[in-house]
Length: 155
Image (cartoon, rainbow, N blue to C red; front, side, top):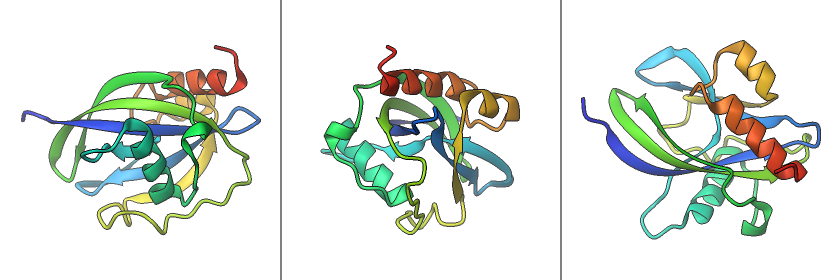
């Protein structure tokens, strides 16, 4: 099956303690396969990557932010995934941002297809996610490490 190419923007909120806020999700075609993924999604027509990242952050977590809250892109990469039996190839731009760990997360703004498939949010360190083995892509812990360094000014 030839994948559908999709441009995406993703946000990695980083706590002062070096954890990253991720979402637990599942593919409706494989509901028992739970995984952790970064916040984000497709860039809509006419949207910039930054605008899409901020919109997705609001939709998926209820957290409002502005462009100045985002870092410069910390990673760009392509990842294959499937959703409800359709193959995709995401071309993602990742942004980091500082965020307090006690921020209130709400899943009330999810798109209808995401309801029941985006299950919860939690803070993860790269090492704990790597050890857990449930990252949506094998390079997510390394991308998280890059985001943490960007927020801390270590880059």
